[in-house]
Image (cartoon, rainbow, N blue to C red):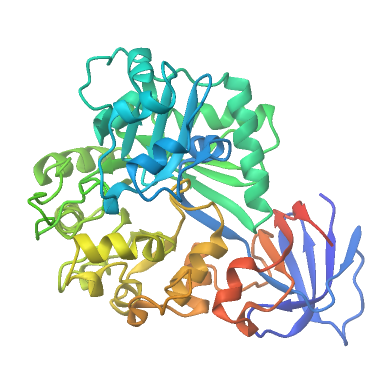
Length: 480
């Protein structure tokens, strides 16, 4: 493997300027730039004081849905069901839109609205949180659900309906996913944890064999494929194939739904008689599935958003004592933060959701938002945080999440609950799966940015210029 010398690299936040030698996929040495003799290397790149950091991970993505969303109609600006429908007026052929948020809409979506703007055309609009799909009559007919009264499908109905849609060709979809990994590498990403609702243990080896994939991938196991994984004898952390890019991930389980869909399972009811949300997997059932997975070496990753759902997830981990993950943990009950400080438990959070959700949270979680997206409380309690985007719910760009974690706003408004902001160093550590700097012997999964992030106003972090990304010492992105 070729060696690489990065000359005059600023190593870490406000770090010293050093020469960094990379060989055999690892950081071989870090020496003072002015004093050390220049070691031999196959390639020498002068960074001129640009900052070298550990490569970044997105620890919660839906890779196929993200790749498809990059090609879908953007509905994020719609402020009503009527506005969302207008964005697809005159559509021809099968049409998919993504990104609507109906939690604050003054009206309700219905299949008749889509039929009025695109008569006879199959149209599917997907909510930003992926928990709701809005089908036109023609689209309902495509999946054999033409008798559905509204065309609005939520939670499991949504997932089943989306899976029934005719997919793009396998080769075309694989190419889209591979292109999305290259785009992620351009933002400093070296790895993702993929929670796609698919046979990830089969799909990713095919992609790596046939496409250029520019990130490492931890391949999750959907709940309905757990028996197959157990029968195959795979265990979380096992490598997949020989390319060194893939490994077996956790099994994904759901306790509840989402905030925007008003199905997050909460102690307090939603306004206007909306109930307490949806308990998708009760504690006894969750415990049984988690225990069976753990006994076969497969760690659970438990989706829990509402405060009661988070409590159910914590109860299950405490009963079993296994390592694993809680995904999202958006609303906590008073006193629950300390329960996250368990050995082997990772709290997977998506800080970009906090500014995105602040208005809908203030409406539906009124009086409780001080313990929503409570990253500072979790860190103080000793939790292990990993940051992700939940792409396509938020863009697959770690700097978006880092900025939101530090600044707690993404517009001109004052920070939302700034007491829950975390430091830049903490956010970078959580975005690098715990790596806290660059040292000899580390894997050469690295990102080079034009400015030292510690010198930037937090609002500027989102647009930071990524000059290069290295994966085991191989350039996956380079503008130098």
